[in-house]
Image: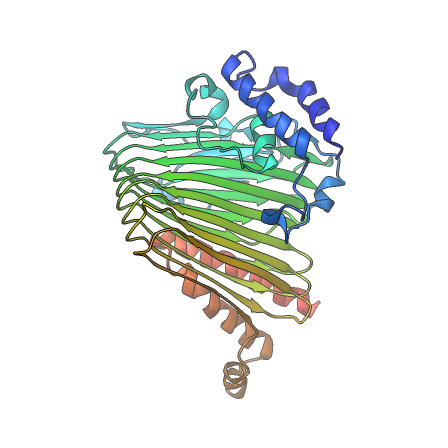
Length: 437
């Protein structure tokens, strides 16, 4: 897509975008537009995008997604949360809020959950507050073209017992369409909540979901954030999470990536107070020619902070994965404890993983480590199962399941853990069906 096309697309829709009459938001939109118009989409010449080439995305002329009156109803809405748990839910189809698919009854006191378009005039000073000058042009594109998203505010001391489910359904269009959700998660002091986010594609045509989430956890807050990416076969999915974690606050994040022809999960976390903690875990399973990129940066900006990240993935056929993880420790961040690990299981000689773990440490009293491994299924384990009468395809799937279950088992919420297990089992079943065909 030529850079001047971004300006033309923006001019065509800007009057209909939420907050079109707000000077502060228009200023942010213009700045984001200039960034993407000047730089274009990132290329492999940009170090952070060295292993992920967006040429396939660049060649498609995506249009803003129109509102859809049908295609998804309440009975067909994908969900990871059982009805008996009475989740609070916001649902979006091709980036547009669907009130008929959402569930906002009986919001607990101290909790605000609404589509961004309905509250855009109330988020001045918070929208864009975590975006720095080095942000990807895709974040700038999101800022310029944001149509809707989620605003979640949790007051100090509130413990939200019901899970909060955010569902994004895409692909229901014959045209190449794009949407750019912007989510704001603002957790007050000593609050607690579980957020379950799902991105699912129900069509095979090309579409582009470019999502940005800004998350602020105030002192003592505890957030569990579980995320599933299962876009359609023609989907391009880029998600950027920008998180600020204050003193003694904890963010427990897990991402399971299964879908899309190209996906990137980019996470930037700043640990900005003593006792701040982040756990970044994830799993991915890719086949065919799918491409999955996980890029993280954890900024230890205060003493006595801790981070842990483990990502495990399975690749088959000609699939490709990328893991780039960086831990940064500032001079004042003494007593930092930071650890990082990437492990990949390669099921085919034609699949590939590129890894780039990094430590950048400017303090001397720290405990930090990183590691990356990639390998095939163990012949001895496979032989053991085969010798006991287990068919080869089933034996291989048992070993793959065991490999991924180790990390999925870290999910603290048992029903969500079971739901993620079921998604992996579905991926394996589809893979066996494909082999049989």
